[in-house]
Length: 232
Ligand SMILES: Nc1ncnc2c1ncn2[C@@H]1O[C@H](COP(=O)(O)OP(=O)(O)OP(=O)(O)O)[C@@H](O)[C@H]1O
Image (cartoon, rainbow, N blue to C red; front, side, top):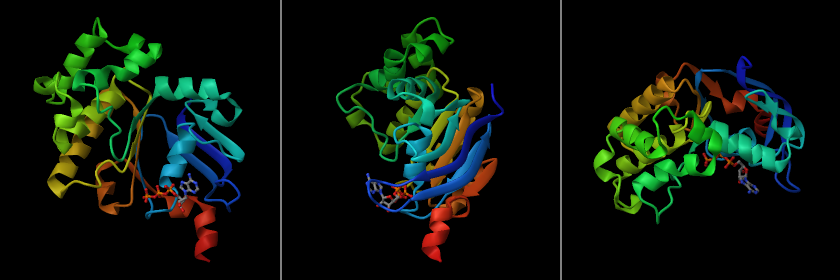
């Protein structure tokens, strides 16, 4: 395993025909580190996460994730790497509304054999039960996710992100709709379970007060030269 889970060099990204949103000479996130990346709304946080998860491709530079340069992979190989090795917690959770809690949590194992093979329980169903119990969701396993409270939906999003122990967990502003107590509880749980699975955690938010929950804090404005050009 490489010592950096994420390693970007000389990256430039622009949406079609626009000027660059991201111009990042260098960004390294060591394996196993829990990193908080902050930046104001519209500064390019989600865009950067999309480059790191291989949803978008940089026009220039290299985007190495878990030792593979995503800019050199074919789309199919990028999708496999994302599904197998990255657990993603979206801003609005993106749970599948017509599936139960159990089915939502199991989804990465159903879709990606590598996630299924890495589970420690004897079956996916047993692993779903184990994680649901760990996250206090065992009573809701057969409920449609649309019947859950926001806090319960967040815990389903964590469960889905960590099942099958992906090496990297990415969270995009998942706490923006929470009050302070719930936000702190969510962050404590997320850092605990990613420590248990030994995942590298990259968490982005505009809210700098969250920095205390993480090993390291980065400012997108500092690492992104496109932002500095715009501000000048
Ligand atoms: N699909 C797209 N096509 C064109 N421009 C886009 C697209 N998605 C985002 N942008 C632009 O790129 C810039 C960065 O957007 P991005 O969503 O990455 O910022 P963000 O920091 O995640 O914002 P927020 O905190 O509000 O979610 C914004 O100016 C946005 O308008």
